[in-house]
Image (cartoon, rainbow, N blue to C red):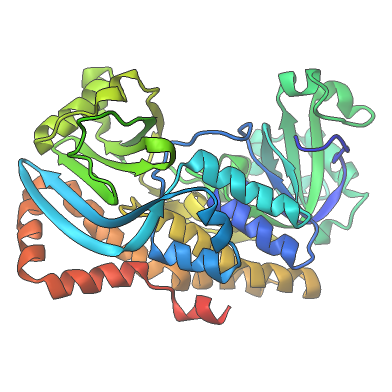
Length: 437
């Protein structure tokens, strides 16, 4: 937790759950607009993250448009200008609009610091849970009483009496025991022994990634993974001499029958690996390293030298989508809305795009009050911001799941380069709606 002042029972204009790219950017823009903003994250910062580390041309343009371009340059990112696909000994090299690669540890910490510099309050190493809207002794969701006792409902209702229930949503915070023991959290009164606190937000932005765990008490936001969904693997490790097949300024994508792995050079002469592999293969090998070895071998590539020494981390099943992304005073952004596999930095561009698109709605909600129209408007704005690009990536992802389709696709890219360039430009463009925002 940054700062020792208690936040228990405090109210905020905006509470942002998840300090990744979508959450941190939302917090920056909300704070710049003069909104009292609280940013929360489950992990202790700075932290590594199982994720790709590329920012494509669209992401860089958005950072520059919001005055953050110079700060990005200060992270010493590596430049990327091409995508190399390797499959079964075949190869395809595609030029792409210039982007950069930088570790998520450095990128996310920088964005969080930027948010704090404009007045945002940041609390890390805390689990946040959004409570259903209390209505006397009941909740907005009929199934909520299955997981929340009536006694707890009455307690929550009493706490809300300090605030106008129609003006706020309640977020419960569960602090790590070691965090409280070290004196990093200053809770008040009876909450001191419980290691919990409650905060109140006029608008809640949920940016906590796959499955949005902060919404587990709201059954209407349940987002189970698609059957057979791939598992994400990630690692950061040193580059060694003799690995000239991993070229600077290039994203190398190794595609095998059991999944694919992307490698790119980041700052400090390190390599970042992000992979998506079939769960069946992972269960067979019982080893993420052996699974990755099979991916590289089937693509006709060597495995990076230092990968065997790296800490390989995994994710929940990746492919999923939220049935809804908004409700009363609550909007979802980033991977919390669902996961579409990105390839050359699209994921972070979508996160930044969504943050830029949602903040005008947040400002309107704070200044003029929440209406049901905002609940219906956010899904429309979200689709306008990222829908077309996600559709393209869904098609590409489906191709990678069917290696027999990949070879003819690579051939088509060589035969029709103009179509390929147009597709790449489509992914990297900034929608007109965001330019006006």
